Length: 259
Image 1 (cartoon, one colour):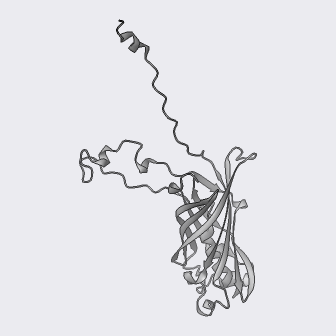
Image 2 (cartoon, rainbow, N blue to C red):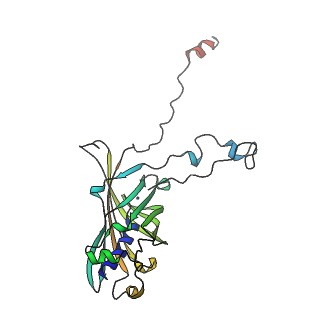
Image 3 (tube, helix red, strand yellow):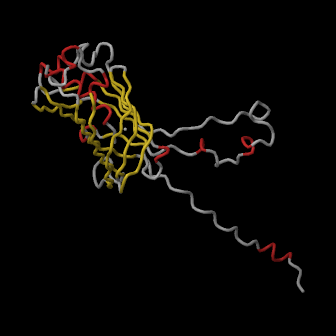
């Protein structure tokens, strides 16, 4: 029974992981070529100047997770006793820019078999059909649908968490701390540390069936914590500087008639 409970918690962790999460800009469809339906001469699509379309705007910055400095943990309750577990294998794809949330996205894939509930019996039970049913659903996924800034370096990620083939909308509040790496292979690059917490309801994912569905045995609420450290190999996107005025052409002066 303990094992099953921990397995549910691990699934909930999937939704939390974020972090630092894959962030991909949404790209609108390209206009049809001239002469085809939807691209009549003089139409807005064919007249749009280069550089003005949303499709040409770059995606948010890419970040790579530092595995040994990242973790997804969960806390659950079985028969009133609290226990803590963790997710050992998860892979995030992160594209994030605090100044360009519209083009930011995160996707996290979790290996359900890597969920560790802190006890051998629990770890065996969570793989069963009553819980994660790993044979049928070996992975869980969290993907963002949007971001909201809630304060200085504070945000909420709206997303979808899929466990056991069931997709549920979730929200993950989190904070970010940015710093410059001073030494090592990544010296000079920017580092971001993300911390987020949320509470999941295991029953929404149909985790714990049969006798395990009783919340007095395993509580439905599972607290998930995500700590993620990521490094960006690309520079922060900045607006292009305004073009300077064209220099005065001396030849033009010579053409000016002398009074």
